[in-house]
Image (tube, rainbow, N blue to C red; front, top):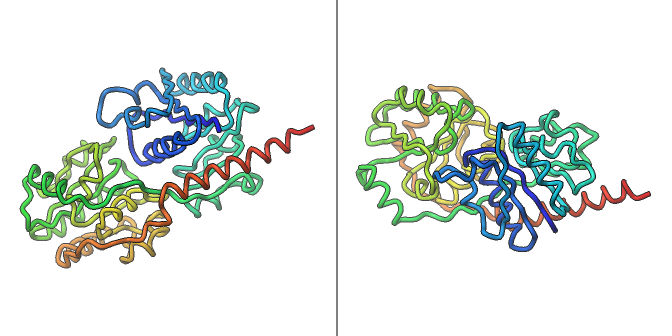
Length: 342
């Protein structure tokens, strides 16, 4: 198949990881393009382009978001496509007005949004709860495919090196959060809860960057380390002793899979993603936005100091997801062909 992915954000995070890993996996067998904003190809650690497999052909577009979407649409029209696959808002808008030039697909990285998704040919939900938000007339053109992880296992060497660089003692119990620093992740409440608990011999690390990073840094007590964006998250998961999510909203929670790949005990609020993975997490979920409950749970976790454990992540292998995505493409291409056959 000839597949073009469209992603017009500038910085690498969970949704961007999903799109890049899917394109890289598909490029092993198919002809794949990735249309990116020029800013995503800048020389900085949180850019996107340098993470793509050399077999993925990169097309760069520029300008304000609206202009970049128009340029992406023109680029798509120039390609001999079977599938155009959009990721996030402006990429979805680039596919609008492209009818008749390949199957137009979007992944629901966050939720169904009519202004982005109503006019497209097919949709892929990453979590079952999203399906209820898709209008009835579009559900025959929608499927749900779980997110995946390609994260590596626990790395003892990376753990030793990072903890030494950060000045942690061998006896320190390090609780880590990782992801975009923005309101939906509840990190301000996590910092407040950690400040209330102040568990002895415990450190909190919040790895990641975002619009709320500066504000959160001002709120954080000295025991909280905020290194900003990290290029190799799996090394940080190896340095942690437990993973915590205080999210108000987490559509699926790719970060949970990455933490579990490293064997970390997981403490999480009952976001959508945490509820979906609760059977795998096997630790009671906390109420969302409840600072006293989070403080109590952090203190209990630090006192318990649970060991690393093994999780069954077989259902979340990328090979399974890639096969399901491509089967969905073929099914929807058949339906589109049947609908247009005179």
